[in-house]
Image 1 (cartoon, protein in one colour):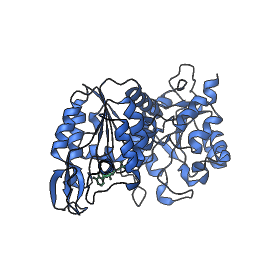
Image 2 (cartoon, rainbow, N blue to C red; image 1 turned 45 degrees about the vertical axis):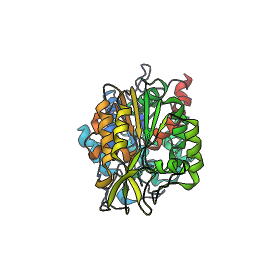
Image 3 (cartoon, helix red, strand yellow; image 1 turned 90 degrees about the vertical axis):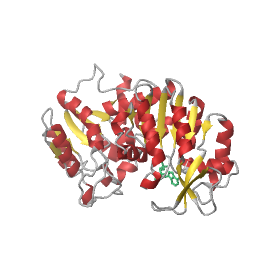
Image 4 (cartoon, helix red, strand yellow; image 1 turned 120 degrees about the vertical axis):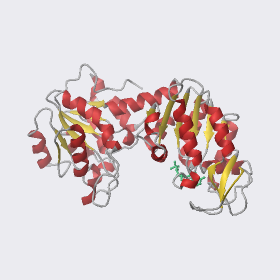
Length: 401
Ligand code: AMP
């Protein structure tokens, strides 16, 4: 892929220009529309500060949650703008819409270095439909477009792929950091490259296992997904969650990557899906009838730690057990400690919404080389796909000159 145009490009003049910045400030909001976790706002700060310092008129764009193409009062950007203005120690003015004449005149009145925040893009159905007219209405508002929403870059939405067709477009600092870290880990890893894939469904991660199966030295599998692999070996998995439709794909993957895929050898079996279930540690293929595996067992943890001990690069996506229940969070917590403990000696990369909650729960979020803000976007990049939001920048007018 051609070089990603960057806001740091020396030839780019931002002073006095209206810059549309597509951010990923899709934060969780409570019933009254207040922000319950501001990490995604913090992540947006460096690019905004860079542009303000450069004298741009900064117009912020984001979607928040899934309002479904209509105005939902408790999903407005106002609370996000308030949080952001506290972080920046600068006024951030929320607007009541994201297109139209009132928005246009508010932007016309901006001074250099000022910030306005357009209303939730997903209040308009044109955003998710990638509507051409909606994209043109947005593009008309600015002179330069910046994509800093890595977490949404796998989406073919108007503000991601539509705007770059009309105005010169660049990558923001967060987007650049994500692409650089993830691409380097996959394309030029310090070896051995060890990939840990957990979570519920093989179906979501087949593409990642296929692509990284070729590139990685070892692939550690955990979470409910392990039971689909065990079914393919003909093992009894009791009432554990698995995907009957994907057993043959799991079998293909085991054959294709023989010797690379490492499965847990034991599990914590439970008599029901609950934190207060009765438990026992059993060999992975010997789960009693009616019982289900909800976490990897202690011997698996020991072996996985051993596998990780010589890593040059570790990429981890997906919890290894039902970490939401404290009784079944130990495997994921132990792996979080082991991976973070390798930071420095190895490049350690974690990502995915559930994986991040799991590492936050054990207080280790700051202890990795790179924590990706993308779930779906990270997986698509690891699958070897080009993200549409990134391709749109490369193809934009900016790369023509
Ligand atoms: P994913 O969205 O595919 O990354 O899956 C994350 C979910 O997988 C989390 O909510 C975990 O609780 C769940 N999970 C992990 N291990 C298991 C398991 N052994 N049985 C059932 N669910 C699991």
